[in-house]
Image 1 (cartoon, rainbow, N blue to C red):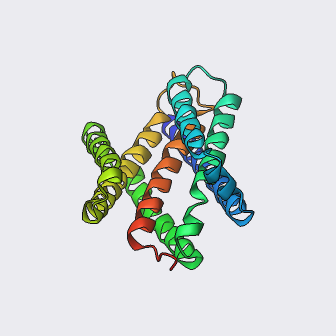
Image 2: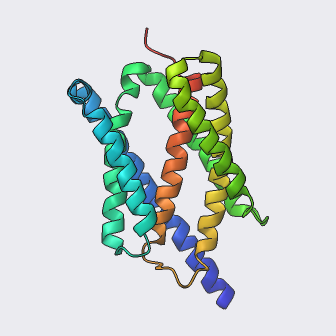
Length: 222
């Protein structure tokens, strides 16, 4: 009976996690399209609000990450949707750079790929704890090199970094999914908001996979 109860708790956590992730992605998509279709993104870029938006995203993520255990579930949920909304505004530029059909097809391809990776993370019995240091170490190096390459403008390096970071997020998705599954056993954590934490983790993983796949394979507007 105890094992059945644990399985039910685990499945409930996963179901809620993916539901919230879906809501976050839906909100991001709606806001991204609205920002683009209304021309609001032009005002944001021309008005130098872009850097403010990026800083706001970082602040929300930091608040979410460091204060997650202390904040009540309602506030954690609000932070999640605030981030999804801000991300929608910044992602509106993909409609300017890439053709709509390419965005749609690659979004679907990313979703299928993400689902497969999440399934691997959920089903595996292996200890993935050692993955964290390696994956995030490579990711930090990749991000630093990406920032440097903004000033250098090396196309080949940019493509290599896209592939490396994409592969890293494949691993991070597997790791995060496995970690979220195991969180259902952490009795000291507030189970009422664990699914929001999991949704944020997987949301970030999916967005990064999608953006990298779009950057590599997306058909750009002429």
